[in-house]
Image 1: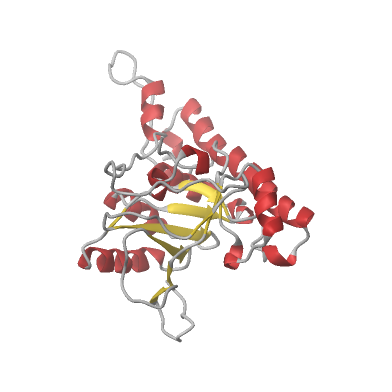
Image 2: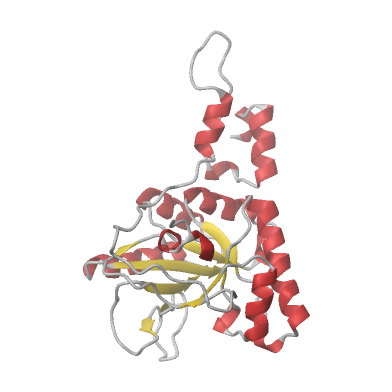
Amino acid sequence: MLGKMPVIATLVAGGLGMAAGAWPAVRASEAGTTGPSMKSQLAAVLADQRWDTPKPGSWTVPKAAADGLPPVLRKIETQEKVVFLTIDDGYEYDAEFVNLVRKEKVPILTFLTSTYVKGHAQYFWALRNAGSQMENHTVSHRNMATLSPDGQKKEICDASDTITRQYGRRPQIFRPPFGSFNQSTVQAAKQCGIKSIMLWSAEFYNGTTSPNGKHNEFQRGDGGTGFKPGDIILMHYRKGLAEQFKMILGWIKAQGFRPAAVENYLPTSLGGNAE
């Protein structure tokens, strides 16, 4: 398809790290024909997905920490039967998953380990265009609590710098690898421009084995079963993610829930979109 693209579109695709198969062809109009301008076509291709916002009064807006540091979030207090799907790391690349997210219009949030951008930037750009913000999951997935304050700051700040250069938006939300952090982590996160730290209330062990020895098991952090309103669910970019994603979407629907965009339930002061 690149052979049929005009020079301008090819340069834009290359500069933004897009894969040719991940976006629709954009061709210059033939002489004498009419239609959308190249600028408007590119704007449509690069447009962000927009997700539904919560109903007024249906959720409790998370508050900033009293000490001014990024608060730690584990769930969202809401009366709506919504859950939030978050996906970590990025060392496996499933093109079918991108198509699934785009086709089904499912909101997700990516916590990207920036070392995995190298050589695969176009994959995450396609996901960004499908509606997933790219948030911070460090450079190399180190255990934050084992690093010095300077080491933690480098892991967080360098990851944010890479993601900003590649995807045009500086991460506002941080997820520490393994959920491991200390006070130095929180302070380093603030120094790097992070507004909130997001953990999780449940995990789908997609493509791997849970601590109970079960493959593809859903497990709540509170020991309960099923979904609860406002759950933040942890998943990972692993081989076969598209089929695993279909699996959890089926469970969510069967229990009368729906996925929602967690960033729409966070105020701008915490890195979200809510006013």
